[in-house]
Amino acid sequence: MNDLGRLEDLPADYVAELRSHNLVPLWPSLRGVLPPKMPTRQTQATHWAYQSIKPLLLKAGELTPIEKAERRVLVLANPGHTLEKMQASAAMYLGMQLLLPGEWAPSHRHTPNAVRMVVEGEGAWTTVDGEKCPMSRGDLILTPTGRWHEHGHDGDQPVIWLDVLDLPLMYYLEVSYHLNGGRQDILPGRGDRAYARPGLVPTPVFGRSGKRYPMMRYPWVDARAALLGLADDQPDLAHVQVTYTNPESGEDAENVLGFHALMLRPGQTLQLPARSPAVVYHVIEGAARVATDAQGFDLVGADTCCIPGYTATTLTNASATEPAFLFVADESPLHRKLGVYEVRPDNQPSMP
Ligand code: 1HN
Image (tube, rainbow, N blue to C red; front, side, top):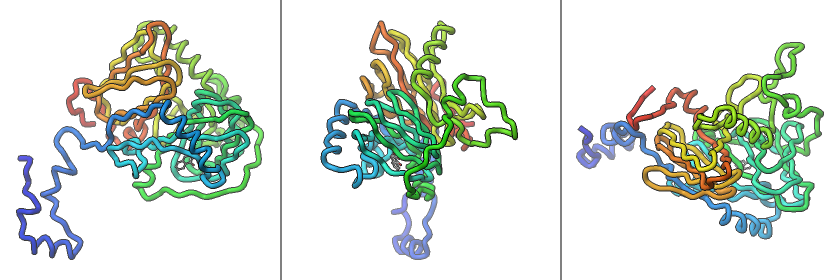
């Protein structure tokens, strides 16, 4: 049933003639590209310890000036895809970026969507289409497709952040490219002020704001307060999580990747069913164990891990007294748009 014949079963001269016409027989490869019940995934569960990354990133700061690097980044590469591919999963790219005091990473824009999750250091900023966004620990800054962005640093300590991009997908689609620009003029207006309170959006005078991306900065103080409020309000709620959304449309903040903040109550263990998207977990505060049936990672401050799709996952707060806060990035908006998003509560296929 599973063996549809091998290429070697065919006469070599026949295969050679097919190939000379740029033809290949499907049947020997059909099960490979369309396996039964469970997709083949290159993505491996992988853990990147911040304790290992930080000294190597600071070393990059000594070895390579920002003028040469443009973006001084160590890529968190998933060995399942081979390190050269610079992929965390099929659609996600992860990198840790260092900006030193006084440095400037010049303005550019590109087709891939990006976000930054600030890990440590004060005084840096990212300007996105003229909006200067301060970067503080735990803040999420969007730089969606096509938006100009540059980074600067007025503080006195190194600043490090986590970049998440849909670069592997865009590259695969052969739509990945960039344009360079000059220093942006800072324009008045800050999305995080205009949309400071949920449920209150600027009244449209002449139609809607017209901006596809009205809010570029999601301060950690707000996400943290939302999680604590939700946990307090719903004491029986296990999955204490908020999703970063577009305040005008209510949709995911970006088109391809989904971004969330998750709180584990003190001592909590949270069982998440297998779902089609790959998921990245990154510790904002506290410590947590991220485990699958096959393996587990103990994540401490600013550690990051990736779990492949279709994998049931258990999250456990390592502390019995303090909440743990995780930043979660996943491929769910993409899967929903493609119509392949799937939850497998009983680990059985549930094809949409
Ligand atoms: C990029 O533009 C940045 O702007 C960081 O900080 C990482 C990785 C691949 C492609 C573009 C940035 C990136 C990137």
